[in-house]
Amino acid sequence: MSDTQQVLYDVPGPKAIRRDKTLNVVFTLVVLGLIAWLVQAAWSRGVLDDRWQVLLAGDKGFSGWDVWRRLLWDGLVLGTLKAVVIAVPIVAVCALVLTVARQAPMRLVRWTAYGFTHVFRGIPVLLLMYFGVIALDLSLLPSVVLGLVVYNTAVVAEILRAGIAALPKGQKEAGLSIGLSPLATMLRIQLPQAVRIMLPALISQIVVLLKDTSLGFIIGYVELLAVTKNLYNFFGSASTAPLILASAAIYISVNMLVARLATWLEGRMRRSSHVARPADGGDVAAPETAARAAYGAGGGAGAAGA
Image 1: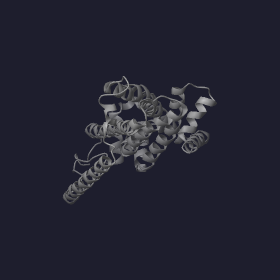
Image 2: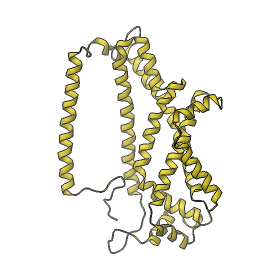
Image 3: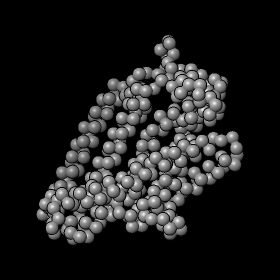
Image 4: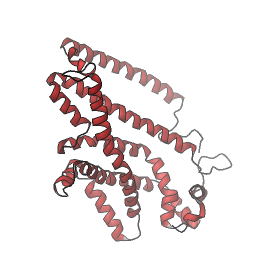
């Protein structure tokens, strides 16, 4: 395994680098041309007038800072990110349990986990939120979290299962051969490799979860989209375009930060990788060697009885 191997993508060659640079230039020119066309069209239609002052100087007794504070603090932090911060750890734990259950030796446990995954992947998140409000009589935040957790647990568990299925069978056999139990083999050897393989899909699912918080607006939960609607109802229809574009810019910025998090995780996982390499400089370690390395990095013989 090369030291320069990436988790999210393979290291490009010279031709790929030249092609990527050319495509980047072309794409940049196209985007700049599109932005210039949109600005010109907006200018010709009188969109770029004093209505944008609502984001700068404010209106009706509100300053521009008051508008941004409501968008960023009341909408993003106290609404959108609060639901995300609560939901993501719960999803991670529940998806791990569901993934282990999908590999359990007991048929009833496997079938139950299989049924949960395929049933709740097919139910809309908004319907789950309504179920929390109407059927369970929960308040708005728990209902939003319930919808996000149930749906995304099913999706993330399926992503992890696909990552485990993509591993060579020798990984599991090697773990069993060095004395690990099936559960310890999955947790110490298979699951960490599955996370590395499926990291792009997992990060993408976090982005989906973040955007799905906007569905809480429909059941009355106050998040970024709801705050935006309240603001343009207060300031009038002229402020609709500036406020919607400001909210879109906030969503895009947060999702870009999540993408940067993926890059940071990729680098950290690559640096902390302890998979043994053959002495002759080959690219792939033997399954048992890799299993011993992963097992040793994960805590040694103490996991054998897990």
